[in-house]
Length: 311
Image (tube, rainbow, N blue to C red):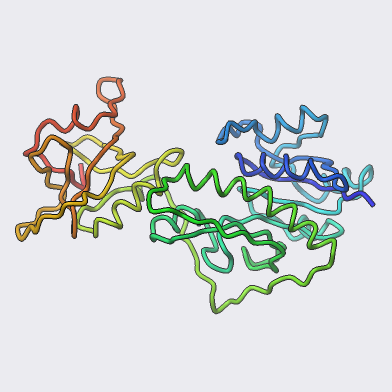
């Protein structure tokens, strides 16, 4: 029996899912729901709409994912699975209960930990040594369904957001194939423990504001977690918003008993006093007279000024 699958999603995550499912002989993709203007792709991936159209698979606008649309598709090809990857909208019960084998989502964490929004970024901000992806059945409560596949992904202390995204998106493909097979084989799923569940609040770009009175490890983690392709961690220097894209923790430590957060040391490198250490800034992003400046040495020329959390 050949299994018919619909994929609903965005970003490189959905593209990786599409490509891996497309390799499975007993599975056929019969439709894709996405936003055609979605360009948030890494790994040099084509968008899922481009991949689908190349293979002659019907692409539907994300807003049209509803029960009537599924019923029309179902007349020609019975829908066995509905797979979500980086989906942006709430899913109605009439939609996720429609497929024969149910609907499934892939989440960027090791559920039940890090339910909610931006779990990969939060894991890096919190200094976790690992994250993961989870393939689970969609239920009424968000991110709470039975788990059919889960992959653990290490986060190195030197990893930036793009490094972890590479690992996560590639794991999406593995998780979806093993998850579908687990459902078809009637493997016993893992029930999520509500006692072990943790949650993530939704982030906005303004949440990247740095506070140099925080421990230096926390500042470093926020910089790397919010780096490209995300909006970035930032502070203000002489009233100008300054994104910090790359930094490191200085190995040599000095015992400052007169500590001023955001103080720039008088040195060749750009060194900033933080709580419990010194941050070495390697790359910035600031726009001056319409031109982007990335070299911190060319920007932080006045060492009497401070990096602060207000304009």
